[in-house]
Length: 263
Image (cartoon, rainbow, N blue to C red; front, side):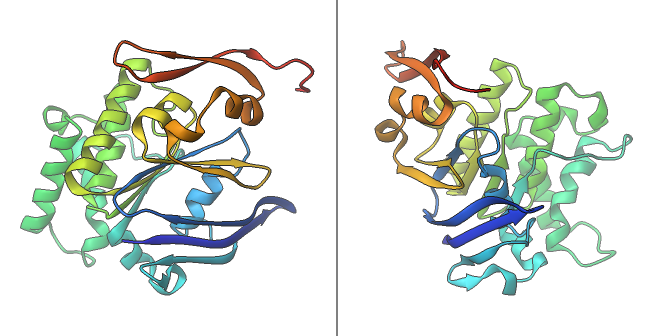
């Protein structure tokens, strides 16, 4: 499905967050949104799925204004994993994942065979089958993040939006989550749009990168072409080196903050 943002501007609490942002997201590709804290990355993500309706401009899904699609219809094809999320303390992993099927059901309907298959598949994709009867609150940080990811996958979305999916995870669990995202993209051609802070995750796990600064997109394209030490300097105000790792991938390594930068 084709998702396009046209001239998106957002002002919240009298503060301008985004100004005339336009971009056509490529169907079936992984796009990373990167930029400094407060650049507007999460705001743009929420606009794309109508979690934030206070914007000017137009977001279209296959040429149709998403404001006219309807929230339930939108949730059948688009899922978001936000930063802020919570569930009742006694919720099991399987119950949590089953919440992802709500857009496909009528009130009071039980699970259909399709629902059960989607839940089972989401648990398998996130390697949580053996934890399905555990309470979510009892899981480790990495397991809990996978459970929330499984909930979005149970929706079987065509477009998956992820807001900092590796936040608070250790290195191993970060890579685990990123590998799952890559698998979902490869197996189902799911369009992935994700806010990332780790610039090397953006280089290694995305097909396209949008760099947001000063309320607008300042660069876009293939990560290996546009992500450089110079970009890191301009966007994050840090000096960096680039080296090649054992797998042959070029890695950007921040060294220090640039001098004469105000905190």
